[in-house]
Image (cartoon, rainbow, N blue to C red):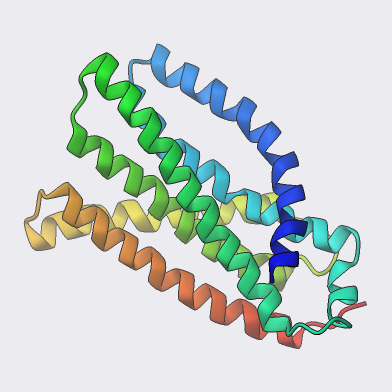
Length: 210
């Protein structure tokens, strides 16, 4: 398993360079538009997209075909992807917390709102990537075609689920506790995460590697 993480980390490092430019641009835009706190959602979402790059990299070098000759199970290959997704999301949350501290001390923004936005970004990143991974294995074959379109679809669906759930919970529960709402959304994301893992394992077990 450690070998799988090391392999994918090399891909993630290359993807981070592109994401860094996107992050800087979005931070600048949010500051100019006087919406600095929105920055806290961005890091986790951007980092979560790196997982698709590791999958496309595997397809590009036919790594999965080689992997099945090694003493690892197919389910372990998928497990490593979802575990990496968790690590990416946790890293994004930590970056958001650092940004939140800077924003709080420079702009005196509300800490509760900041915490909510950090967890909101984590929920969106986690649920969207959990939807994206099985879509990639189902519809991309071994060449990564249509991966960009599927990414847009998955993140649109994931973001929509989170925001619709947020407003539905506020109405049904008559709750304005942002921490409670963000916790429920995170649990929902973890539930989709588990479903996504189960579905992806089944798809990968049925996949013909060539």
